Length: 188
Image (cartoon, rainbow, N blue to C red):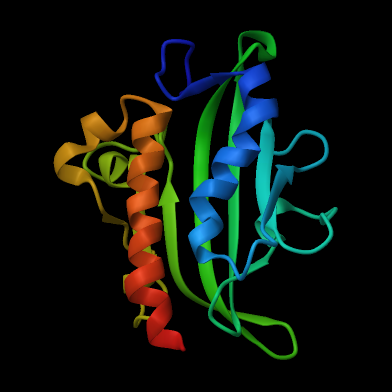
């Protein structure tokens, strides 16, 4: 549960004016050229406000369906964040940040490869809750049931990662860098 005491919050003005630029900066190393855009989805979404990334016209659909091209042909990404209001909407707490990378298979199929997720306020009992709260990956091109596993990237220092939005985004940035340098080049 997100509370006003959580360090993973932003004031409404910071969220609405600055968060899109921070997300674009996080994702830019993945993107094909400088076309990457980040914006709020229209209206409320799952009880909060959602940011999504795209590289064409802003979609009117669910932000989990918004796409951007990566620097590897036929590999695309989807990124969205859900922020839930606290105290009447003066403050928002991050509920989830999800990056999915997949191969686009014509005509319109998504062949998921890897997902980077963080569910900072997941209420599952530990250890599952700790695995899910920090940045973790799902390897989707593996034999079942491995794609359902949460592989934590910062388990040993999760408390440090969760001290602020800056530290959480630095950890997410490290994971994006891993995808940029070690995962995507293997699909060229």
